[in-house]
Image (cartoon, rainbow, N blue to C red; front, side, top):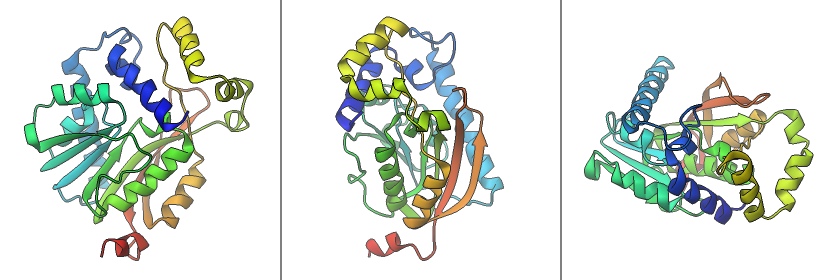
Length: 257
């Protein structure tokens, strides 16, 4: 799925069942999410994350934060409780429209539509905290790896990057017949099939080997602080949360001079 197809895919989610597309909890499909409950889950997640980060000895300057793959702003709004300014970025116009509608913090929270495979709308060394959860897992690996490089570029010298990315099972990496079908059949026909089978579109799960992610981070000026394995709903998959800082001798730091 290329970047244009990805935008079309998630824009459709934003128009039909946006909250369930973001948090696919059983019983919440068909627009059954309570809005307050949905946003409260973001408050709880961010609170736990920052407490855990503190336990790792990570001190985060509470100035600028970025929520990548912000959707309707579930995590962006929660981050506003801890940072002076928060930027939310998403590929889907419908999601950004809803995020702006549900923004409770005015100019303290700014949402951006980004339909490119980079984050060129932000200067290098901008953000003290960059966070992405359950977003990269729906993006083709060639794009997700490029976005990780961009996270490191826009991260401030003393900033903290935290992102989640699953690792696909070996059977999936070997490209099953189902994957071959997904690659060869036009996205429009696949979406018709998904509507018939699932009653709507279904997010596609994609992953990158942990070793490849670690190598990429180190090669692009990052320093691994901690990698946490977490439960994954998809059978056979593993999910990891990466805690990263810029290496003191990062080549990326020199680019901003």
